Amino acid sequence: MQVILRQLGDCSIRRAEPSDLIPVMEVNLKTLPEHYSDYFYESLLAEIPEAFIVAEVGNKIAGYIMCKTEYGFSNFKKLGFVKKGHVVSVAVLDEYRRKGIGKALVEESVNGIRIRKCDEFYLEVRCSNNDAVRLYEKLGFVIRQQLHSYYRDGEDAYLMAIEIDHT
Image (cartoon, rainbow, N blue to C red):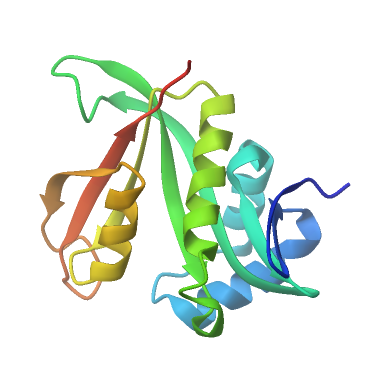
């Protein structure tokens, strides 16, 4: 059963289903240099379906965000060990960008992470991806550190994080 979370004009933002995984992989291949195995997509959908979200226009997947949960040192507290949500990958096809889809995907994944009682949510983003950095900042994420040579091509990444409010 499809769980539609929000409507943006003709675009439905909804939880992903197993039948969405091949189209999600196609979006990934068209938009990002980082690719994953079929099993990886399946495992993330099984682990945290609340934060594996797709954007669908007509019957076409236009974008997605997939996340996982983990435990680790806080990005905010000096000695804190916390449950964190981690954005593994987010992408929107070129022809659907600048329509609010990326923003909606991130916002709905924050809601999914909140359901899973995570204290923080973080992601890595290419330092050169100014549009994405600005979007994440508008959504409350802050740059916590620069990760040198994070990507395979040697580019640095910003680690950006947000604390999750449970009130």
